[in-house]
Structure formats: C-alpha cells, structure tokens
Length: 386
Image (cartoon, rainbow, N blue to C red; front, side, top):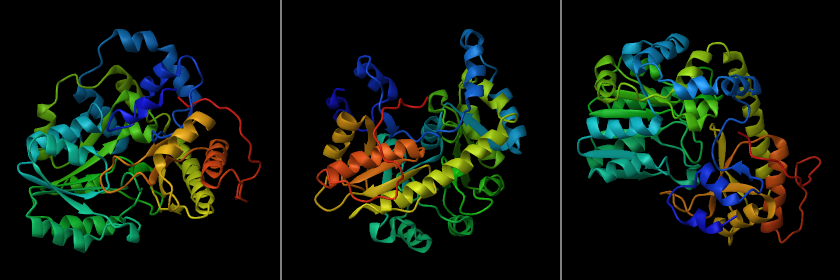
C-alpha cells in the first residue's frame, strides 16, 4: 500500500481510497474508523443486498417522513428533531445559522467543531484538556474559561473524541444551567450509545425543553454504518425548526430510510452489539494497559486513546503496523490538543486485538514479545469488516 496516502491530508483517508490503493491485496484490519463490529448483523446486510436495486433506483421519502419514523422508534417528538446527511451536515448548518461570532470548545475533540467555525470566520476559543487529568473536563473551570473569553456558544462532545472521556449526566446538566445566558450550548453525543457508565446517559429530553441547547446524535457511528451518512439533532421546536427549514427536502438517502424503518425490528440485536462491544472495550483496555510504558486513557466510546512510551512516535509505528501486520491505526498528530505520540484505537473483537498487540509489541520492544494478558497470540490475516 502507498504510505504517502496517509500523509497527504488532514484526516484519515477513506476506506475507498485505501481500497483503490490496495491493488487487489487484502484490506488491513481497521482500528482507525470507529465502527460497531457487531452491527448491523449479517441478516440486515442480506436484506439490504436483496433490495439493492430498489434502494438505488428510487427516490427516498422526504425528510419529514423519515424523521417521523425515527421519532416514533426513539420516543421523540418530531417537532424537536432535525435529521441530516451525517452529523457533519448538521454541524455545518448549526455554524451557519446559529453561531454568530465565537465558539468555545475543549480540545482535543472532533475536528469539525474547530475547523467549521474557523472556515466561516468565527473566533474559536480552545480550552485545553489536560493529559494529567486523563483529558477529563472540569465543568467549573470550563465555565470560567468561557466567561473570561466572552464566548457566545459552547460545545462539548460526550463521550469525547479521540479520548472517549465521559462527563456524567448530572455534570452535563450543571454545565447547561451555568450557560443559560449563552446563545447556544451544543452537546455532541455522537458516540453516546456506547456509554455504559450509568443507566440513562444523554440529555436529549432536557434539550427539547431548554431555550438554548442542541444535542447531536449520529446513527451512522452508533450503527456502524458510516457510509449511509445520517445523524439527527434534538432541540426545542424553535431551534430544531430553524435548522430543519434550512435543510433540503430530500437530504436523506434511500439507504438511510430503509435502515430507519428497520430499527424497531432489530433493536434487541443492536442492544446486544453494544453489550459485546463494552466487554471488548474493557478487555482491550486491560491488555493495552499491560504494555510497559504505554498510557491508556479511560473511555466510554468505542475507541481507546493511548500515549506511546517515551521516545516513540506514532507515524513510524502506524506505518509498521500497516506494512508488516496489515493493521490500520489512527495516529493523532494532526488533532489539536494531541501529538503524534498518541494513537486512537477502535475497539474490535479479541482475534483482531491479538494481531494489533503483536505488531505493537514487535515495534515498541525491539521484537521481544513481552508477557501479555492475551491467550493464544498468533498472527493470521483477516479482512476488514464491512
């Protein structure tokens, strides 16, 4: 694979770019793109494949019809919801319609929350999360930062990307109470379904009745269907309506419609996928934590942030894993608030994690395979999950 592709852009190259560059070779195991490895199930993919001609040939329903079905399944009021062609489309419209002059956001975080307002000439006040505190957000200190900068909009991602840090629900509500006077407060819960730290995470219900709060969710990230591009926001009817009215009438595709109308039927399988992923996350955290000198940060997302031992850089490690072990990881040198000493590693099943650990151990410890809490380590080729 041509490694220059990994160095030519600000974000990780797409699966399709890698596929074109592979020239028929097998694709690497993907620890870069945060997909759900257990959902959709093979049965869902079989259904989608069997209806591919219909899905591709015909227009989808309008966004209102799809939104109504989503709200019926999730117990939301349609007047409080706007659906977008991926959460990034909604971030773009939020910036254009609702962010006037300045926006405050902790870093590191999802890059569009800094890049998008900067591209439209807004001031972005970046609040650095401290590695010494495991990148945890201190609500009181963040509030003081926003006040000192005079920011009019505040954003938090919960869980945060790339570290997976999670702010408990009562702390999020305390933050919202402190920011009642701001133009807007956004809680990006794109990875919220992976949280198992408390029974009922998320503040969508509260956003629907507050004057200045938007909650953003990503069905594509949660369902492992990034290619379908669908996300939604929840806010009071006036705020949601302002975004909804700006969106094109047919901004959602037919694949998104089919999946939304299948959600109710496959919700038990989806919940089981989250349970399995949570178990994998705990196992992977322990295994990475046993590697000498490697720092692993607590996460409630479907990924783990690690800092490499002193003297090691993520770029050559990423290249080694890709060329020698067919493993693709996210090196974080282009993320504000981190350096190339950090990797974000997607949670995957144990058979894939074994392969990752072998490659990392070989590179970091001069080929000496240290004792690690993994049974039956062996290197075998597997293809990238769909």
